[in-house]
Image (cartoon, rainbow, N blue to C red; front, top):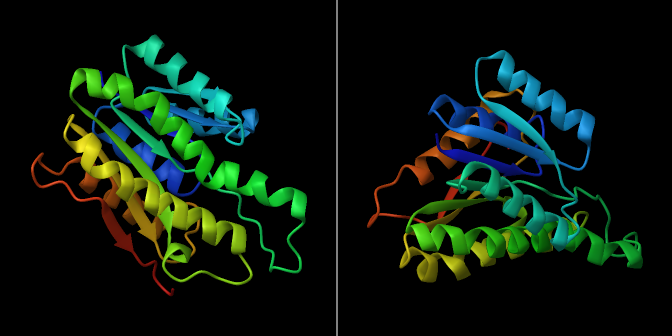
Amino acid sequence: MKTFLSIGSGPGMGLATAERFAREGFRVVVSARNADRTRDLAEALRAKGFEAEARGVDTSDPASVAALVEDVARAFGGIDVLHYNAASMRQAALADQPRETFNDDLAVNVGGALAAAQAAAPGMRARGSGTILLTGGGFALQPHPDYLSLSIGKAGIRALAQGLFASLAESGVHVATVTVAGFVSAGSKDAEAVADAFWSLHDEPRGAWTVESTYTPSGA
């Protein structure tokens, strides 16, 4: 059975994407800092008949992210798809952003994604296959003055995907991002549509891989 690892799992796009891959026969591992919430997500998936496990991770700590990836890969013989979905959704303009929080926000918004890719890529390259999916955002294209750290983080996610795409594709690893240009509610049709976009990127035939898909939620 193939393994799908979600990092920064939540009840919205994270859960919807995990379920989308579970429907395709993947074993799903969901992970986040909040242990109770993460267990609830895994239980919701299991209640639908899917194979799912919950793990803890601190996405602001690169060592915690790397340890999670390595542990899941060791437990299941590798990771076929990694989805980085974590984000610090701080609302703060320039004058309001506490100085001591900015680097913490960036650590979650883009640093964790880099650590996850660093940890997962060697195993995928050795096998000659794998997919690394990153949840992007419209603030990467149109930064918002009231969400500066998130805007910079989403710009970093987009740059990370584009920067890794060509070199990892040569080894059979597909790196891609869905740029979500608007707010997505948990349990919504938009969340399901984003999940479908992630599946479509993963399911692209080698030789026709793309690095980015953009989705605009209804009403955005």
